[in-house]
Length: 427
Length: 172
Image (cartoon, rainbow over the protein chains, first blue to last red):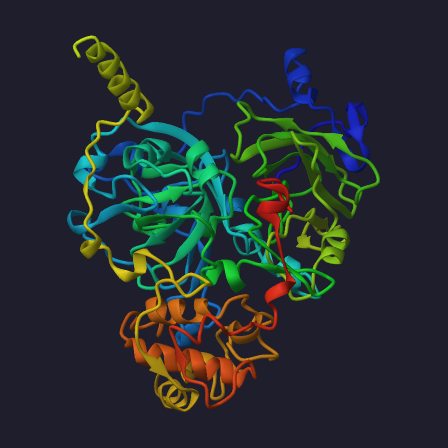
Protein backbone atom coordinates (compact mmCIF):
# COMPACT_ATOMS: atom_id res chain seq x y z
CA UNK A 1 0.00 0.00 0.00
CA UNK A 2 1.37 3.37 -1.01
CA UNK A 3 0.28 6.15 1.30
CA UNK A 4 -0.06 9.62 -0.18
CA UNK A 5 1.30 12.43 1.90
CA UNK A 6 -1.02 15.07 0.45
CA UNK A 7 -3.06 16.92 3.06
CA UNK A 8 -6.64 16.37 1.90
CA UNK A 9 -8.03 19.32 3.84
CA UNK A 10 -5.84 21.81 1.98
CA UNK A 11 -6.86 20.81 -1.54
CA UNK A 12 -8.94 22.64 -4.14
CA UNK A 13 -12.04 20.50 -4.60
CA UNK A 14 -14.12 20.64 -7.79
CA UNK A 15 -17.00 18.34 -6.77
CA UNK A 16 -18.08 15.83 -4.16
CA UNK A 17 -16.31 12.56 -3.36
CA UNK A 18 -12.88 14.16 -3.46
CA UNK A 19 -12.77 15.32 -7.09
CA UNK A 20 -10.07 17.96 -7.39
CA UNK A 21 -9.65 20.98 -9.57
CA UNK A 22 -7.98 20.13 -12.84
CA UNK A 23 -5.23 22.59 -11.94
CA UNK A 24 -4.46 21.04 -8.57
CA UNK A 25 -1.22 19.26 -9.30
CA UNK A 26 0.16 21.89 -11.63
CA UNK A 27 -0.50 24.59 -9.08
CA UNK A 28 1.05 22.77 -6.17
CA UNK A 29 4.09 21.78 -8.20
CA UNK A 30 4.60 25.35 -9.32
CA UNK A 31 4.40 26.55 -5.75
CA UNK A 32 6.84 23.90 -4.68
CA UNK A 33 4.38 22.52 -2.18
CA UNK A 34 3.76 19.05 -3.58
CA UNK A 35 3.74 17.98 0.03
CA UNK A 36 6.25 15.24 0.27
CA UNK A 37 5.90 13.88 -3.25
CA UNK A 38 9.58 14.59 -3.82
CA UNK A 39 11.70 13.27 -1.04
CA UNK A 40 15.40 13.60 -1.78
CA UNK A 41 17.36 10.53 -0.85
CA UNK A 42 21.02 10.33 0.02
CA UNK A 43 23.24 8.20 -2.17
CA UNK A 44 23.86 4.92 -0.40
CA UNK A 45 27.18 3.19 -0.77
CA UNK A 46 25.62 -0.13 0.17
CA UNK A 47 22.71 0.09 -2.31
CA UNK A 48 21.93 -3.08 -4.19
CA UNK A 49 23.01 -3.15 -7.82
CA UNK A 50 20.65 -5.36 -9.83
CA UNK A 51 22.20 -8.05 -12.00
CA UNK A 52 21.02 -6.49 -15.31
CA UNK A 53 23.08 -3.47 -14.44
CA UNK A 54 26.15 -5.67 -14.22
CA UNK A 55 25.89 -7.50 -17.54
CA UNK A 56 25.63 -6.87 -21.28
CA UNK A 57 22.09 -6.80 -22.59
CA UNK A 58 20.49 -9.14 -25.10
CA UNK A 59 21.31 -8.97 -28.80
CA UNK A 60 19.15 -7.06 -31.25
CA UNK A 61 16.04 -8.67 -32.65
CA UNK A 62 14.16 -7.94 -35.83
CA UNK A 63 10.73 -7.48 -34.33
CA UNK A 64 10.24 -6.31 -30.77
CA UNK A 65 7.84 -7.74 -28.24
CA UNK A 66 6.41 -6.56 -24.91
CA UNK A 67 8.49 -7.15 -21.79
CA UNK A 68 8.21 -10.66 -20.41
CA UNK A 69 6.75 -9.26 -17.19
CA UNK A 70 3.88 -7.79 -19.24
CA UNK A 71 2.82 -11.13 -20.68
CA UNK A 72 -0.43 -10.99 -18.74
CA UNK A 73 -1.59 -8.02 -20.82
CA UNK A 74 -3.77 -9.94 -23.24
CA UNK A 75 -7.10 -9.60 -24.98
CA UNK A 76 -10.00 -11.25 -23.15
CA UNK A 77 -11.31 -13.94 -25.48
CA UNK A 78 -14.99 -14.82 -25.44
CA UNK A 79 -16.17 -17.79 -27.48
CA UNK A 80 -19.90 -17.68 -26.78
CA UNK A 81 -20.51 -21.15 -28.19
CA UNK A 82 -17.11 -22.63 -27.32
CA UNK A 83 -16.28 -25.75 -29.31
CA UNK A 84 -19.66 -25.81 -31.06
CA UNK A 85 -18.70 -22.75 -33.10
CA UNK A 86 -15.19 -21.64 -32.11
CA UNK A 87 -14.83 -19.56 -35.27
CA UNK A 88 -17.29 -17.09 -33.73
CA UNK A 89 -15.34 -15.15 -31.16
CA UNK A 90 -14.93 -11.81 -29.47
CA UNK A 91 -11.61 -10.52 -28.11
CA UNK A 92 -11.67 -7.45 -25.89
CA UNK A 93 -8.92 -4.86 -25.53
CA UNK A 94 -7.64 -4.69 -21.91
CA UNK A 95 -8.18 -0.95 -21.52
CA UNK A 96 -7.59 -1.12 -17.76
CA UNK A 97 -4.00 -2.18 -18.48
CA UNK A 98 -3.32 0.48 -21.12
CA UNK A 99 -2.82 4.24 -21.16
CA UNK A 100 -2.79 6.82 -23.90
CA UNK A 101 -5.22 6.52 -26.78
CA UNK A 102 -3.64 4.31 -29.47
CA UNK A 103 -4.42 0.63 -29.09
CA UNK A 104 -1.37 -1.56 -29.68
CA UNK A 105 -2.03 -3.58 -32.85
CA UNK A 106 -1.73 -6.90 -31.04
CA UNK A 107 -4.37 -5.84 -28.52
CA UNK A 108 -6.93 -4.40 -30.96
CA UNK A 109 -10.32 -5.95 -30.36
CA UNK A 110 -11.60 -8.67 -32.68
CA UNK A 111 -15.02 -9.98 -33.56
CA UNK A 112 -14.95 -12.89 -35.94
CA UNK A 113 -18.05 -14.46 -37.46
CA UNK A 114 -16.05 -17.15 -39.19
CA UNK A 115 -12.55 -17.12 -37.76
CA UNK A 116 -9.40 -15.42 -38.99
CA UNK A 117 -8.58 -16.32 -42.60
CA UNK A 118 -5.05 -17.04 -43.76
CA UNK A 119 -4.82 -14.91 -46.92
CA UNK A 120 -2.00 -15.04 -49.47
CA UNK A 121 -1.54 -11.34 -50.29
CA UNK A 122 -0.17 -12.17 -53.74
CA UNK A 123 -3.52 -13.77 -54.67
CA UNK A 124 -5.78 -11.22 -53.02
CA UNK A 125 -7.65 -8.69 -55.20
CA UNK A 126 -10.01 -5.83 -54.59
CA UNK A 127 -12.86 -5.71 -57.13
CA UNK A 128 -15.02 -2.66 -57.83
CA UNK A 129 -18.04 -3.52 -59.97
CA UNK A 130 -21.79 -3.17 -60.42
CA UNK A 131 -23.06 0.30 -61.32
CA UNK A 132 -19.70 1.67 -62.46
CA UNK A 133 -18.39 2.78 -65.85
CA UNK A 134 -15.26 0.64 -65.60
CA UNK A 135 -15.30 -2.54 -63.47
CA UNK A 136 -11.81 -2.73 -62.01
CA UNK A 137 -9.58 -4.96 -59.93
CA UNK A 138 -6.54 -4.00 -57.93
CA UNK A 139 -3.76 -6.10 -56.51
CA UNK A 140 -1.68 -5.09 -53.53
CA UNK A 141 1.29 -3.99 -55.65
CA UNK A 142 -0.89 -1.53 -57.57
CA UNK A 143 -2.57 -0.19 -54.43
CA UNK A 144 0.81 0.39 -52.81
CA UNK A 145 1.54 3.01 -55.50
CA UNK A 146 -1.51 5.18 -54.70
CA UNK A 147 -1.19 8.38 -52.66
CA UNK A 148 -2.12 7.53 -49.08
CA UNK A 149 -3.64 9.37 -46.16
CA UNK A 150 -3.31 8.77 -42.44
CA UNK A 151 -6.03 9.24 -39.83
CA UNK A 152 -6.65 8.09 -36.26
CA UNK A 153 -10.05 6.52 -35.67
CA UNK A 154 -11.76 4.22 -33.23
CA UNK A 155 -13.56 1.09 -34.23
CA UNK A 156 -16.30 -0.16 -31.95
CA UNK A 157 -18.35 -3.31 -32.28
CA UNK A 158 -22.08 -2.57 -32.12
CA UNK A 159 -22.15 -5.24 -29.41
CA UNK A 160 -19.56 -3.59 -27.18
CA UNK A 161 -20.59 -3.55 -23.48
CA UNK A 162 -23.21 -6.22 -24.20
CA UNK A 163 -23.04 -7.74 -20.71
CA UNK A 164 -24.07 -4.46 -19.10
CA UNK A 165 -26.85 -4.18 -21.65
CA UNK A 166 -28.54 -7.49 -20.91
CA UNK A 167 -27.34 -9.03 -17.65
CA UNK A 168 -29.85 -8.51 -14.81
CA UNK A 169 -27.01 -8.18 -12.30
CA UNK A 170 -23.76 -6.40 -13.14
CA UNK A 171 -21.02 -8.82 -14.19
CA UNK A 172 -17.83 -8.48 -12.20
CA UNK A 173 -15.13 -8.36 -14.86
CA UNK A 174 -12.50 -5.99 -16.18
CA UNK A 175 -12.76 -3.39 -18.90
CA UNK A 176 -11.53 -6.01 -21.38
CA UNK A 177 -14.73 -8.03 -20.94
CA UNK A 178 -17.08 -5.15 -20.19
CA UNK A 179 -16.00 -2.53 -22.73
CA UNK A 180 -13.14 -4.10 -24.70
CA UNK A 181 -14.79 -4.16 -28.14
CA UNK A 182 -13.54 -0.66 -28.94
CA UNK A 183 -10.01 0.20 -30.04
CA UNK A 184 -8.20 3.14 -31.58
CA UNK A 185 -5.66 3.06 -34.39
CA UNK A 186 -3.66 5.25 -36.70
CA UNK A 187 -4.82 3.94 -40.06
CA UNK A 188 -3.07 4.59 -43.36
CA UNK A 189 -4.53 3.85 -46.74
CA UNK A 190 -6.22 5.15 -49.86
CA UNK A 191 -9.27 7.42 -49.79
CA UNK A 192 -12.14 5.29 -51.11
CA UNK A 193 -13.27 8.19 -53.29
CA UNK A 194 -10.08 7.90 -55.36
CA UNK A 195 -10.73 4.25 -56.19
CA UNK A 196 -14.46 4.69 -56.71
CA UNK A 197 -13.91 7.61 -59.06
CA UNK A 198 -11.38 5.61 -61.03
CA UNK A 199 -14.10 3.02 -61.61
CA UNK A 200 -16.61 5.78 -62.32
CA UNK A 201 -19.76 5.41 -60.20
CA UNK A 202 -22.93 5.75 -62.27
CA UNK A 203 -25.48 8.32 -61.05
CA UNK A 204 -27.88 5.58 -59.93
CA UNK A 205 -25.20 3.93 -57.78
CA UNK A 206 -26.25 4.96 -54.27
CA UNK A 207 -25.04 2.03 -52.16
CA UNK A 208 -21.95 -0.15 -52.04
CA UNK A 209 -22.10 -3.78 -50.92
CA UNK A 210 -18.71 -4.56 -49.40
CA UNK A 211 -17.66 -8.18 -48.96
CA UNK A 212 -14.70 -9.83 -47.28
CA UNK A 213 -12.55 -12.75 -48.41
CA UNK A 214 -13.19 -14.67 -45.19
CA UNK A 215 -15.07 -17.98 -45.12
CA UNK A 216 -18.52 -16.45 -44.58
CA UNK A 217 -17.78 -13.62 -47.07
CA UNK A 218 -19.25 -11.16 -44.59
CA UNK A 219 -21.10 -8.44 -46.50
CA UNK A 220 -22.70 -5.11 -45.65
CA UNK A 221 -24.57 -2.46 -47.64
CA UNK A 222 -23.02 0.97 -47.16
CA UNK A 223 -24.36 4.33 -48.33
CA UNK A 224 -22.29 5.73 -51.20
CA UNK A 225 -22.35 9.08 -49.43
CA UNK A 226 -20.33 7.64 -46.54
CA UNK A 227 -17.90 5.76 -48.77
CA UNK A 228 -17.16 8.89 -50.77
CA UNK A 229 -16.95 11.34 -47.87
CA UNK A 230 -14.43 9.69 -45.55
CA UNK A 231 -14.22 5.98 -46.38
CA UNK A 232 -10.69 4.60 -46.53
CA UNK A 233 -9.16 1.45 -47.94
CA UNK A 234 -6.89 0.84 -44.97
CA UNK A 235 -3.63 -0.99 -45.65
CA UNK A 236 -1.60 0.00 -42.59
CA UNK A 237 -2.36 -0.14 -38.87
CA UNK A 238 -0.17 1.93 -36.57
CA UNK A 239 2.43 2.15 -39.31
CA UNK A 240 2.71 -1.53 -40.18
CA UNK A 241 0.62 -3.66 -42.51
CA UNK A 242 -2.77 -4.45 -41.04
CA UNK A 243 -2.72 -7.48 -38.76
CA UNK A 244 -4.56 -10.62 -39.91
CA UNK A 245 -6.97 -10.08 -37.01
CA UNK A 246 -7.89 -6.66 -38.42
CA UNK A 247 -8.27 -7.63 -42.06
CA UNK A 248 -4.90 -8.32 -43.69
CA UNK A 249 -4.10 -7.33 -46.35
CA UNK A 250 -6.81 -4.64 -46.52
CA UNK A 251 -10.00 -3.52 -44.84
CA UNK A 252 -12.67 -0.91 -45.27
CA UNK A 253 -12.63 1.91 -42.75
CA UNK A 254 -15.82 3.93 -42.19
CA UNK A 255 -15.03 6.37 -39.37
CA UNK A 256 -17.67 6.35 -36.63
CA UNK A 257 -19.75 3.52 -38.11
CA UNK A 258 -20.31 0.24 -36.25
CA UNK A 259 -17.35 -2.13 -36.51
CA UNK A 260 -19.18 -4.80 -38.51
CA UNK A 261 -19.47 -2.46 -41.51
CA UNK A 262 -15.71 -1.86 -41.65
CA UNK A 263 -15.29 -5.02 -43.72
CA UNK A 264 -12.09 -6.93 -42.98
CA UNK A 265 -10.16 -8.82 -45.68
CA UNK A 266 -12.04 -6.63 -48.16
CA UNK A 267 -12.23 -8.13 -51.65
CA UNK A 268 -15.32 -6.69 -53.31
CA UNK A 269 -17.18 -3.40 -53.60
CA UNK A 270 -20.38 -3.88 -55.56
CA UNK A 271 -22.22 -0.68 -56.43
CA UNK A 272 -26.03 -0.95 -56.30
CA UNK A 273 -29.09 1.28 -56.27
CA UNK A 274 -30.39 0.01 -52.95
CA UNK A 275 -29.19 -1.89 -49.88
CA UNK A 276 -29.42 -5.65 -50.47
CA UNK A 277 -30.39 -6.68 -46.92
CA UNK A 278 -27.46 -8.92 -46.11
CA UNK A 279 -27.63 -11.27 -43.13
CA UNK A 280 -25.94 -8.81 -40.80
CA UNK A 281 -28.24 -5.92 -41.65
CA UNK A 282 -31.31 -8.18 -41.47
CA UNK A 283 -30.89 -9.64 -38.01
CA UNK A 284 -27.55 -9.60 -36.29
CA UNK A 285 -27.09 -5.82 -36.43
CA UNK A 286 -30.65 -4.57 -36.15
CA UNK A 287 -32.11 -3.54 -32.80
CA UNK A 288 -35.51 -4.47 -31.40
CA UNK A 289 -37.15 -1.54 -29.65
CA UNK A 290 -39.34 -1.53 -26.57
CA UNK A 291 -42.49 -1.58 -28.73
CA UNK A 292 -41.40 -4.72 -30.59
CA UNK A 293 -40.55 -2.98 -33.84
CA UNK A 294 -36.97 -2.84 -35.04
CA UNK A 295 -34.52 -0.26 -36.32
CA UNK A 296 -32.10 -1.11 -39.11
CA UNK A 297 -29.25 0.77 -40.79
CA UNK A 298 -28.28 2.26 -37.42
CA UNK A 299 -24.76 2.94 -38.54
CA UNK A 300 -23.03 5.52 -36.36
CA UNK A 301 -21.94 4.75 -32.81
CA UNK A 302 -23.31 6.97 -30.06
CA UNK A 303 -21.37 9.11 -27.57
CA UNK A 304 -19.75 7.03 -24.84
CA UNK A 305 -17.11 6.98 -22.13
CA UNK A 306 -15.87 4.90 -19.24
CA UNK A 307 -13.25 5.28 -16.54
CA UNK A 308 -10.29 2.95 -17.05
CA UNK A 309 -8.36 3.97 -13.92
CA UNK A 310 -9.63 2.92 -11.50
CA UNK A 311 -12.03 0.34 -12.87
CA UNK A 312 -13.70 -2.96 -12.10
CA UNK A 313 -11.40 -5.74 -10.80
CA UNK A 314 -8.80 -3.22 -9.58
CA UNK A 315 -7.95 -2.66 -5.93
CA UNK A 316 -7.17 0.80 -4.57
CA UNK A 317 -3.83 1.09 -2.80
CA UNK A 318 -5.16 3.07 0.13
CA UNK A 319 -6.66 6.52 0.62
CA UNK A 320 -4.98 9.52 -0.92
CA UNK A 321 -4.23 10.96 -4.32
CA UNK A 322 -5.17 9.29 -7.62
CA UNK A 323 -5.65 10.42 -11.17
CA UNK A 324 -8.98 9.31 -12.56
CA UNK A 325 -8.47 8.49 -16.22
CA UNK A 326 -10.66 7.12 -18.96
CA UNK A 327 -11.67 7.06 -22.59
CA UNK A 328 -14.43 8.89 -24.45
CA UNK A 329 -15.56 8.84 -28.07
CA UNK A 330 -18.47 9.42 -30.44
CA UNK A 331 -19.31 8.33 -33.95
CA UNK A 332 -20.84 11.76 -34.54
CA UNK A 333 -17.55 13.71 -34.51
CA UNK A 334 -15.54 15.03 -31.60
CA UNK A 335 -15.99 14.63 -27.88
CA UNK A 336 -16.90 18.05 -26.48
CA UNK A 337 -16.89 17.38 -22.75
CA UNK A 338 -16.46 14.64 -20.18
CA UNK A 339 -17.77 15.09 -16.67
CA UNK A 340 -16.80 12.88 -13.75
CA UNK A 341 -18.75 12.19 -10.60
CA UNK A 342 -17.35 10.63 -7.41
CA UNK A 343 -20.61 10.68 -5.48
CA UNK A 344 -22.88 8.59 -7.65
CA UNK A 345 -24.01 11.46 -9.83
CA UNK A 346 -24.95 14.03 -7.18
CA UNK A 347 -22.19 16.40 -8.31
CA UNK A 348 -19.98 16.49 -11.39
CA UNK A 349 -16.66 18.06 -12.34
CA UNK A 350 -15.36 18.55 -15.85
CA UNK A 351 -12.36 16.41 -16.74
CA UNK A 352 -9.37 17.54 -18.77
CA UNK A 353 -9.27 16.18 -22.34
CA UNK A 354 -5.85 15.19 -23.69
CA UNK A 355 -5.46 16.96 -27.01
CA UNK A 356 -5.64 17.01 -29.84
CA UNK A 357 -9.26 15.88 -29.65
CA UNK A 358 -9.80 14.11 -32.97
CA UNK A 359 -13.09 13.29 -34.70
CA UNK A 360 -14.23 9.67 -34.42
CA UNK A 361 -11.24 8.85 -32.25
CA UNK A 362 -10.71 7.79 -28.64
CA UNK A 363 -10.07 10.77 -26.39
CA UNK A 364 -8.32 10.38 -23.05
CA UNK A 365 -9.78 12.29 -20.14
CA UNK A 366 -8.42 12.75 -16.64
CA UNK A 367 -9.14 14.43 -13.35
CA UNK A 368 -7.17 14.50 -10.06
CA UNK A 369 -8.91 12.88 -7.12
CA UNK A 370 -8.32 12.62 -3.41
CA UNK A 371 -9.98 9.50 -2.07
CA UNK A 372 -10.65 9.71 1.64
CA UNK A 373 -11.21 5.98 1.94
CA UNK A 374 -14.99 6.00 2.20
CA UNK A 375 -17.19 3.97 -0.17
CA UNK A 376 -18.47 5.87 -3.20
CA UNK A 377 -19.43 5.52 -6.85
CA UNK A 378 -17.31 6.90 -9.71
CA UNK A 379 -18.69 7.55 -13.16
CA UNK A 380 -18.04 9.52 -16.33
CA UNK A 381 -20.52 11.17 -18.67
CA UNK A 382 -19.49 12.29 -22.16
CA UNK A 383 -21.09 14.94 -24.35
CA UNK A 384 -20.23 15.22 -28.03
CA UNK A 385 -20.07 18.22 -30.34
CA UNK A 386 -23.64 17.63 -31.53
CA UNK A 387 -24.82 18.00 -27.92
CA UNK A 388 -25.62 14.30 -27.48
CA UNK A 389 -25.06 13.09 -23.91
CA UNK A 390 -24.48 9.56 -22.62
CA UNK A 391 -27.70 8.20 -21.11
CA UNK A 392 -28.16 6.50 -17.76
CA UNK A 393 -28.58 2.73 -18.05
CA UNK A 394 -32.28 2.84 -17.11
CA UNK A 395 -32.98 5.40 -19.84
CA UNK A 396 -31.12 3.32 -22.42
CA UNK A 397 -32.95 0.14 -21.37
CA UNK A 398 -36.31 1.89 -21.62
CA UNK A 399 -35.79 2.49 -25.35
CA UNK A 400 -35.12 -1.11 -26.29
CA UNK A 401 -36.51 -4.63 -26.06
CA UNK A 402 -35.03 -6.52 -23.11
CA UNK A 403 -33.04 -8.75 -25.47
CA UNK A 404 -31.19 -5.94 -27.23
CA UNK A 405 -27.47 -5.73 -26.55
CA UNK A 406 -26.41 -3.52 -29.48
CA UNK A 407 -25.38 0.15 -29.43
CA UNK A 408 -25.21 0.24 -25.62
CA UNK A 409 -23.63 3.55 -24.60
CA UNK A 410 -24.91 4.10 -21.06
CA UNK A 411 -22.91 5.67 -18.24
CA UNK A 412 -20.65 3.18 -16.41
CA UNK A 413 -20.68 3.48 -12.61
CA UNK A 414 -17.85 1.88 -10.63
CA UNK A 415 -18.42 1.23 -6.91
CA UNK A 416 -15.35 1.79 -4.73
CA UNK A 417 -15.75 -0.06 -1.44
CA UNK A 418 -14.26 0.95 1.89
CA UNK A 419 -11.83 -1.93 1.42
CA UNK A 420 -10.70 -0.40 -1.89
CA UNK A 421 -12.30 -2.95 -4.22
CA UNK A 422 -13.63 -1.50 -7.48
CA UNK A 423 -16.80 -3.15 -8.74
CA UNK A 424 -19.24 -2.91 -11.63
CA UNK A 425 -22.63 -1.58 -10.51
CA UNK A 426 -25.84 -0.36 -12.13
CA UNK A 427 -27.32 2.97 -11.08
CA UNK B 1 -12.12 21.12 -86.81
CA UNK B 2 -8.88 22.23 -85.25
CA UNK B 3 -10.59 24.88 -83.20
CA UNK B 4 -12.25 22.12 -81.17
CA UNK B 5 -9.00 20.51 -80.18
CA UNK B 6 -8.14 22.79 -77.25
CA UNK B 7 -11.68 22.44 -75.95
CA UNK B 8 -11.52 18.66 -76.22
CA UNK B 9 -8.16 18.59 -74.49
CA UNK B 10 -9.52 20.77 -71.72
CA UNK B 11 -12.50 18.46 -71.30
CA UNK B 12 -10.23 15.45 -71.07
CA UNK B 13 -8.07 17.20 -68.49
CA UNK B 14 -11.14 18.08 -66.48
CA UNK B 15 -12.31 14.48 -66.63
CA UNK B 16 -8.93 13.25 -65.47
CA UNK B 17 -8.92 15.70 -62.58
CA UNK B 18 -12.45 14.71 -61.62
CA UNK B 19 -11.26 11.13 -61.53
CA UNK B 20 -9.27 12.17 -58.46
CA UNK B 21 -5.59 11.97 -57.79
CA UNK B 22 -5.02 8.27 -58.28
CA UNK B 23 -2.48 6.88 -60.73
CA UNK B 24 -5.22 4.84 -62.43
CA UNK B 25 -3.68 1.42 -61.92
CA UNK B 26 -6.89 -0.59 -61.73
CA UNK B 27 -7.09 -3.44 -64.22
CA UNK B 28 -10.25 -4.28 -66.17
CA UNK B 29 -12.48 -6.74 -64.34
CA UNK B 30 -14.38 -9.19 -66.55
CA UNK B 31 -17.82 -10.40 -65.48
CA UNK B 32 -16.57 -13.98 -65.63
CA UNK B 33 -13.99 -13.19 -62.95
CA UNK B 34 -16.55 -11.99 -60.39
CA UNK B 35 -17.39 -14.77 -57.90
CA UNK B 36 -20.97 -15.09 -56.66
CA UNK B 37 -20.10 -13.90 -53.16
CA UNK B 38 -19.00 -10.53 -54.59
CA UNK B 39 -22.68 -9.82 -55.26
CA UNK B 40 -25.78 -10.50 -53.16
CA UNK B 41 -29.19 -11.84 -54.03
CA UNK B 42 -31.55 -8.87 -53.95
CA UNK B 43 -34.98 -8.85 -52.26
CA UNK B 44 -36.66 -8.93 -55.70
CA UNK B 45 -34.81 -12.17 -56.50
CA UNK B 46 -32.20 -10.68 -58.82
CA UNK B 47 -29.18 -12.94 -58.64
CA UNK B 48 -30.98 -16.13 -57.71
CA UNK B 49 -29.72 -19.13 -59.72
CA UNK B 50 -31.75 -21.93 -61.28
CA UNK B 51 -32.65 -24.81 -59.01
CA UNK B 52 -35.24 -25.81 -56.44
CA UNK B 53 -35.67 -27.48 -53.09
CA UNK B 54 -38.45 -28.50 -50.74
CA UNK B 55 -38.74 -28.43 -46.97
CA UNK B 56 -38.62 -32.24 -46.88
CA UNK B 57 -35.36 -32.26 -48.81
CA UNK B 58 -34.08 -29.50 -46.58
CA UNK B 59 -34.91 -31.47 -43.44
CA UNK B 60 -32.47 -34.21 -44.47
CA UNK B 61 -29.67 -31.78 -45.20
CA UNK B 62 -30.40 -29.90 -42.01
CA UNK B 63 -30.22 -33.09 -39.94
CA UNK B 64 -26.86 -33.95 -41.47
CA UNK B 65 -25.13 -30.58 -41.46
CA UNK B 66 -26.84 -28.01 -39.24
CA UNK B 67 -28.02 -29.48 -35.93
CA UNK B 68 -24.74 -29.18 -34.04
CA UNK B 69 -25.01 -25.39 -34.05
CA UNK B 70 -28.71 -24.70 -34.54
CA UNK B 71 -30.36 -27.61 -32.66
CA UNK B 72 -32.37 -30.67 -33.56
CA UNK B 73 -35.39 -28.81 -34.86
CA UNK B 74 -33.83 -25.41 -35.52
CA UNK B 75 -35.18 -23.74 -32.41
CA UNK B 76 -32.80 -25.06 -29.74
CA UNK B 77 -29.52 -23.51 -30.82
CA UNK B 78 -27.17 -22.87 -29.17
CA UNK B 79 -26.07 -20.71 -32.12
CA UNK B 80 -28.70 -18.20 -33.25
CA UNK B 81 -31.46 -20.73 -33.98
CA UNK B 82 -33.27 -19.84 -37.22
CA UNK B 83 -36.65 -21.17 -36.10
CA UNK B 84 -38.74 -19.12 -33.72
CA UNK B 85 -39.99 -18.15 -31.39
CA UNK B 86 -37.33 -19.71 -29.21
CA UNK B 87 -35.72 -19.08 -25.84
CA UNK B 88 -32.25 -18.41 -27.22
CA UNK B 89 -32.34 -15.80 -29.93
CA UNK B 90 -34.87 -12.99 -30.34
CA UNK B 91 -34.24 -12.59 -34.07
CA UNK B 92 -34.70 -16.02 -35.70
CA UNK B 93 -33.80 -15.79 -39.38
CA UNK B 94 -36.90 -17.56 -40.66
CA UNK B 95 -39.38 -15.23 -39.01
CA UNK B 96 -37.53 -12.02 -38.12
CA UNK B 97 -35.57 -11.16 -41.28
CA UNK B 98 -37.45 -8.83 -43.62
CA UNK B 99 -36.64 -10.74 -46.84
CA UNK B 100 -36.54 -14.47 -47.61
CA UNK B 101 -33.90 -13.96 -50.31
CA UNK B 102 -31.34 -13.26 -47.57
CA UNK B 103 -31.74 -16.86 -46.37
CA UNK B 104 -30.62 -18.21 -49.73
CA UNK B 105 -27.67 -15.90 -50.10
CA UNK B 106 -26.41 -16.26 -46.57
CA UNK B 107 -26.67 -20.05 -46.51
CA UNK B 108 -24.92 -20.28 -49.88
CA UNK B 109 -22.00 -18.03 -48.98
CA UNK B 110 -21.49 -18.79 -45.31
CA UNK B 111 -23.00 -22.09 -44.17
CA UNK B 112 -22.04 -24.48 -42.68
CA UNK B 113 -19.52 -22.49 -40.67
CA UNK B 114 -16.78 -25.10 -41.11
CA UNK B 115 -17.39 -25.58 -44.85
CA UNK B 116 -18.83 -22.41 -46.36
CA UNK B 117 -19.70 -22.46 -50.10
CA UNK B 118 -19.94 -26.27 -50.06
CA UNK B 119 -23.72 -26.48 -50.57
CA UNK B 120 -25.25 -26.77 -54.04
CA UNK B 121 -27.91 -24.34 -55.21
CA UNK B 122 -30.58 -27.05 -54.86
CA UNK B 123 -29.43 -27.82 -51.32
CA UNK B 124 -29.51 -24.12 -50.49
CA UNK B 125 -33.05 -23.72 -51.79
CA UNK B 126 -34.05 -26.81 -49.80
CA UNK B 127 -32.58 -25.43 -46.56
CA UNK B 128 -34.30 -22.08 -47.11
CA UNK B 129 -37.57 -23.95 -47.66
CA UNK B 130 -37.03 -26.03 -44.50
CA UNK B 131 -36.41 -22.96 -42.33
CA UNK B 132 -39.37 -21.07 -43.78
CA UNK B 133 -41.66 -24.09 -43.37
CA UNK B 134 -40.54 -24.68 -39.77
CA UNK B 135 -41.41 -21.04 -39.05
CA UNK B 136 -44.84 -21.47 -40.59
CA UNK B 137 -44.07 -18.94 -43.31
CA UNK B 138 -44.59 -21.37 -46.25
CA UNK B 139 -46.41 -24.66 -46.49
CA UNK B 140 -44.67 -27.99 -46.81
CA UNK B 141 -45.50 -28.49 -50.47
CA UNK B 142 -44.06 -25.28 -51.88
CA UNK B 143 -40.64 -25.74 -53.44
CA UNK B 144 -38.34 -22.76 -53.21
CA UNK B 145 -37.03 -21.53 -56.57
CA UNK B 146 -35.86 -18.29 -58.14
CA UNK B 147 -39.56 -17.46 -58.64
CA UNK B 148 -41.12 -18.59 -55.36
CA UNK B 149 -38.48 -17.44 -52.86
CA UNK B 150 -38.68 -13.68 -53.56
CA UNK B 151 -42.48 -13.93 -53.50
CA UNK B 152 -42.45 -15.13 -49.87
CA UNK B 153 -43.92 -12.46 -47.60
CA UNK B 154 -41.93 -12.42 -44.38
CA UNK B 155 -44.07 -11.85 -41.27
CA UNK B 156 -41.81 -9.15 -39.77
CA UNK B 157 -41.30 -7.34 -43.08
CA UNK B 158 -43.17 -4.14 -42.24
CA UNK B 159 -41.75 -3.84 -38.76
CA UNK B 160 -38.44 -2.06 -39.46
CA UNK B 161 -37.56 1.62 -39.36
CA UNK B 162 -34.78 2.62 -41.77
CA UNK B 163 -32.70 4.92 -39.56
CA UNK B 164 -30.32 5.95 -42.36
CA UNK B 165 -33.25 7.18 -44.44
CA UNK B 166 -34.76 8.87 -41.40
CA UNK B 167 -31.76 10.69 -39.96
CA UNK B 168 -28.60 9.72 -41.82
CA UNK B 169 -25.45 9.25 -39.76
CA UNK B 170 -26.93 10.74 -36.59
CA UNK B 171 -26.72 7.95 -33.99
CA UNK B 172 -30.14 6.48 -33.15
